[in-house]
Image 1 (spheres, one colour):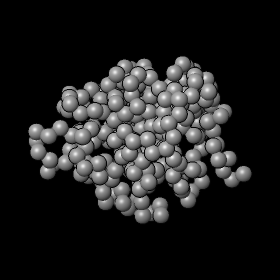
Image 2 (cartoon, rainbow, N blue to C red; image 1 turned 30 degrees about the horizontal axis):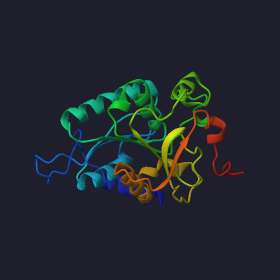
Image 3 (tube, rainbow, N blue to C red; image 1 turned 120 degrees about the horizontal axis):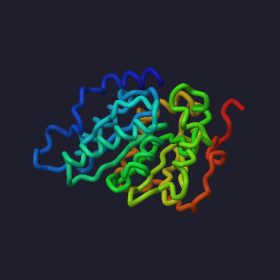
Image 4 (cartoon, rainbow, N blue to C red; image 1 turned 45 degrees about the vertical axis):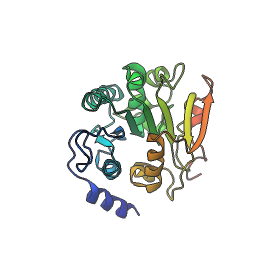
Length: 248
């Protein structure tokens, strides 16, 4: 399955100009929304291109950011630039951030600290370590995502779901972190996977069930459970291993 998914990504990838829309659409038509993809760490833009192309075919403008996930603050600044460009090019279209893995962390830092919650209509987090991941601890890059760091503590201080942005969480049944936030959040029904939450986590953008859930979220459909938990209800410890530690 891994080989098939990688072949799919390579075949579907294309050189995409910023916020490309379906070229067959009438020039005067505003896109249904602008969808900006924020990759996971070291994943690169390629795995997100098939989903971006599929959305473009249905009238969305899309852009996949080329970020490495090594520095959450620097990536948040890049997201801010992309959102401002999108709003300038398509002022009548809502903006959706579709984030993956640590891209969800830099995306939420942008919403909270850089004024993004006033500009982004929808925030979709796929496989997100919202309260940190032990995998980041001791890394030479992205170590601020380790649970309990000053960065993660500040990110999760107070209400996690800032502003009028709609927050959505997507994860597999075997994800290592559950992606919960306190405050209002749609938690889409976890999708099945044959993996253990490791390698398949990196391939999530290529899984058809993920695209289906992303489309629902971007369209404002909560295909799961809407939760509104009080501040402090989610902790780093409670967010880890929602279906048990793999290999145990």
